[in-house]
Amino acid sequence: MSEFNHLRTNELISSLRKDGFDALILFPGPNMAYYTGFNIGLSERLASALIPMNGKPTFIVNKLEEELRGQTPWFKEKAIWLEQEDPIAILAETMKDRGLVSAKIGVPEDAPWGWVNRLQAALPGVQLVDVSDYVSNIRMVKTPQELEWMTMACHVADMALEASFSKLHTDMTEKELSETLSEEMSRLGGGQTFTGVLFGERAALPHGNPGDRRLKQGEAILVDMGCTVNGYWSDITRTVFYGEPSLRQRELYDIVLRANRAAFEAVRPGVTSQSVDEAGRKIIEDSGYGRYFIHRLGHGVGLQVHEAPYIVLNNRLRLEPGMTFSDEPGIYIVGELGIRVEDTLVCTHTGCESLTKFNRNFLTYPVKD
Image 1 (tube, rainbow, N blue to C red):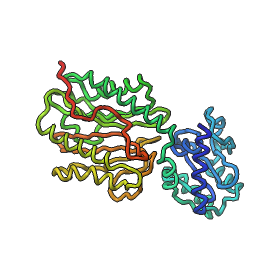
Image 2: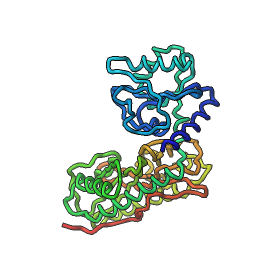
Image 3: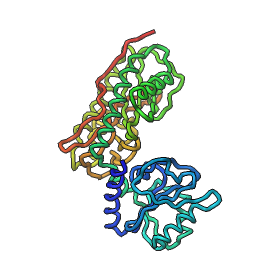
Image 4: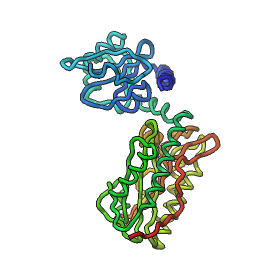
């Protein structure tokens, strides 16, 4: 992976250099992992990567991390700080050594503001500039290897859904189904997982957590879930029905599914993110349920479950082959029901492909006592 990380960093540096940047500073999180190959979580101990446009890149890490956790990033130079020392002072000194005391430095939006403010105070001549767009623009377009890992993660999620839905039974709790889904994804090779499971009227809570609510005949089951393969996420939502559904449930599901398909058909290189949102949203609005579709149509998926590009009104970013994102229209009527159909998509040279394959047609499961 270190060669991959280096190549992507070179793309980023080329873009930043054109706009007069002198260096980039990354802090713990997906961006540091992606551009350096050093994956470390945020903690009270400062860790950062200083990457000049010209000159040697350097990690600034605590003595505990001197061996970089046994990982193999594409550069190895380190400035080590001890527990009794001020790590911001060490970072500032390293920047002085690189001639960056009055430089234009790029910092992405995930940088801890406390550390950034202290660095600004230590080096008042430095211009710290948000480079989130630069950083995300590289990550948005996936390489064939990244797409392969995402395809694998989506396959794991598909298989876990199929296995878990076959175990539905009366009085099963949301928590029990959530645990079953997580176990299946792990068994099938998924890494990190997330599962959201909601029954009946609780499905109208888009970000509700699984609880002790028990499954009853005739109810909708909304499952939002995903997992990682080599750090890359899948994201899928399916709404299915336990026992005989009502005519209203069928009608609302049909609206949401048609919105999902309309958005899918709208995806091709060169169209705006906004236009894809509009395509799906129009179906729901024309059916009279526009006020119950309360979120954007989708979000990017990759090293993070939510990342750029965001498929939302007023986003005029044009889609490119290799961009991956969700397609997830929904209708949420509080106190009654919620329905969402979500896939992970990739924009291709000719249109669009769904990486999630689980049946998205109206599905019912037999009652089991």
